[in-house]
Length: 139
Image (cartoon, rainbow, N blue to C red; front, side):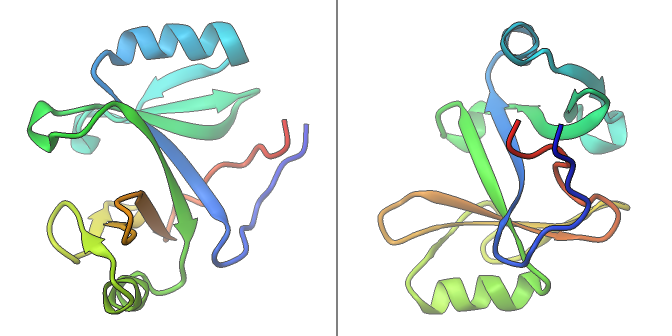
């Protein structure tokens, strides 16, 4: 199993699924990929981490109807300066998501941001502080 401990800037570093039925999603990905799951705890809003052979590979969260967004996966790209990257994306024509163009701190883990490219596709950004992203690649 190829394990990655560092991620080049600009490369995918994390993925997560916003699902209207997290329990059913967990059952599906456990059956298909053999993933196991662990809830991060109430301080992380019920976020669920997925593991392959004990290594982090993805996250799952409840898709809040207020988001007015379909269930789906988001890919996060590694950035060393999330504020600068969001500013560059907006200057290039990106639309903002969530709380405008402000990055959100995930306590003890890192900083996340979201934007939409000019065609409306969502892009996630991740600046790690304690969470290095997925560790299993090409599996």
